[in-house]
Image (tube, rainbow, N blue to C red):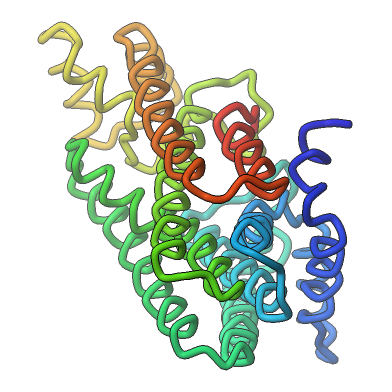
Length: 324
């Protein structure tokens, strides 16, 4: 039994139902829209977020119809943001397959993203929970604000770890904490347990994004996007931020000039990547990631012992140890 099967095992039946309802939620009689939907379903990832919802609900008591519905709309919301992100970043590949905007065009991609987002909002209303709808509404704002903050940071070449962490919180930590919070709410957990689950998801979100950012520094990893892509877009992430604090002054000044002038040639990107590696950037980022993982596990162990809690623990390990 592989790690993924062990993670899913406590909610295997519920996860199967999620996959069916997720596919059923995206249907259209418009030919081009359905073609785009088929591409989305074909390129769907590992569904980490719905697994978080399902496992958290079960760890808090039981998976309900509201839990399944929540897992579906949160994955729809996430999918919509990825579609829009690919248009903004002009990304042509995601998870090793062509992105929607590479197959169609930006106009179709934006409209498809809007369609998926609208479907997510409809599903969230079907929960009948104002608390859940409020979380989703704030989540949409946070995700948008995080993207704009990241663009602003890249455009103005803001090289500050605190600013970097703010972007991560808005872009990733908020989404994962919403998954665990809503999962707990859907199981009618106590307010104390809901808050613990939310904190667990937030720590896991920091861990997830730092791991993603580390991938950008390794050509040999098959991560489904070009190596150095973040740097190419002016996004200076944790490994390079730390290296710029630690490196020799002359070298740092030379590379800061590259960053501020946005002279991101292939040669300069390689130089920035090697500089980050040579000056402890990867080790520092991994250390911070492990700190957040440890915090997530500490909170998780406050939940009642169960197979679902063990599944969440395995999922936390998987997020930190994954290779793509």
